[in-house]
Image 1 (cartoon, rainbow, N blue to C red):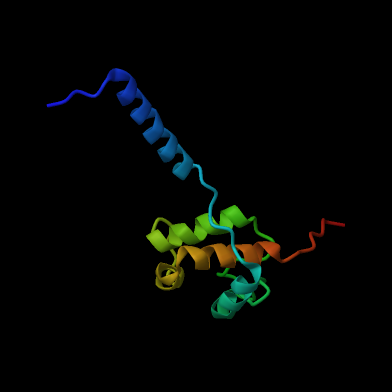
Image 2: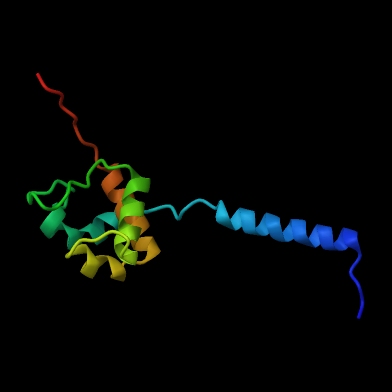
Length: 116
């Protein structure tokens, strides 16, 4: 059996660590706002096409921060976050669907009005 020199082992270990670190820190898939708008058609019954819900049990999505929306949809998809309707819808979403929906709803500008 041939032994690998210490320097070669160290270099291989560092290279493997660099690859794992690069993959782990890679940015999330960028969403496509236009594609998200098309995909949001299936969400409009509860959340409204513009992300402004008319139902008290469905949250407004427009103007939410994109990473928050991605995280919420991923949690619904995995079951870490519970909701009767979302537990049916979210498992069918791909990572691209989630990114696109989050990009679309985050891109909707909202007006924040303070108390008079």
